[in-house]
Length: 278
Length: 260
Ligand SMILES: Nc1ncnc2c1ncn2[C@@H]1O[C@H](COP(=O)(O)OP(=O)(O)OP(=O)(O)O)[C@@H](O)[C@H]1O
Ligand SMILES: [Mg+2]
Image (cartoon, each protein chain N blue to C red):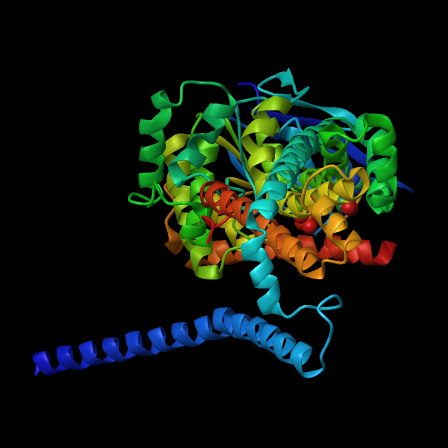
């Protein structure tokens, strides 16, 4: 009798597990396979349409030809990808350090906050790309100006996100610390900064994409090296296939860097996130 | 014996952007060593403000607060605070959260670990020492917060509606836990609540505040002996005390309505 009951329960558990697996597979198909299928069909349509309407390769080469250029011109492309990547990472790193530092000062002193924060927000609103030529005037056409411009472009999202995070600590948590006569610095290190980490990372994810934009714009203007320069160069020779191949490499670089920041975020938030990074 | 807490015509007026808000007009009271006093009163009458002033986190606008005979000028480490939300650090385990005040006070954490484990066991959380807040229920989190308030053996426990975010059954359990702890640890306690029954069950005395700007409308002694058993809540005496308090609070509301 009890054996049968046990068997029934076992069967119910197995059926439940099967349902859960099916639901997981359906979710995977929807969230992973569907977007990939969409992208592939757009590329397929592009290939077909270019041939069907006889679009000249100068206007729009088919994806297969772009892939061909990607393979043939790989030495050139990878050579130019290196400075772009390094400068973007450099600009991003500086932006993160300076951004967190400035946000700390903004939260630490109401005078500094009153003096700077409205200006930070104002700067966030101006079209910063328009200032790129100024950086060339100030710093020349070398790496420094591109690094500085990329820092400038990607700095504001980090400041604003970090300042929001540092100020977002529950008021009672701060009261508790103060009641124990903890110093502002102790409260910053043990409470404010860890609380702000999720915000800091959301700022960093914006910063990494912005820093690539900053570097590419810098390369457009300084015309020395890098994928931005290669795109400019290819366009002057009407090599549309090379332009698209360079853009594809740029996308890959951007995706990889964004992925690295996302990975770091997951590792850090597994330790410091509100719910163990789940 | 000097009173644990003496409030001498304490008042608080907040300066806001466009007006002065007189939260507390005048409060005079004395709380003896080892006494557990609840504070009842309509929302916005200044209960939290009063508690923060006793904790030294807000300065009174006039009057004076003495703790064990000495004027309060700022935070003192002899206070344990418990809030409505557990306000645990989400990335720390239950044990680390209990030990957090020790770290803030730069005392040797290892020396307090045994006490932290004992406290957690006493509130029924053995086995949960290494769990993080998101793995605990609301009631369990608030138990951790109670242990955190007690870890440095403060002489004064200040509690601002610590159980009002919990469901009724958990709340009853927490009341019994608090009574147990109270009778073991012998501290002086100020307990802000909106629950009349909770106030009567836990306290030696209940203060009722009027609406804003507030004064003390009633200072009621609760005669039940300790240790307190949950059964006292069924007695006629308990019902009578609750009735008196309810009538006073409602009169306070009425006064406010007339004023408006
Ligand atoms: N920092 C502040 N600045 C200005 N006004 C404040 C401040 N803190 C509280 N007040 C005002 O003082 C009054 C009393 O607030 P308090 O929080 O002490 O009330 P309370 O009795 O704890 O209310 P509740 O039961 O809702 O928690 C309220 O009118 C509130 O708006
Ligand atoms: Mg309150």
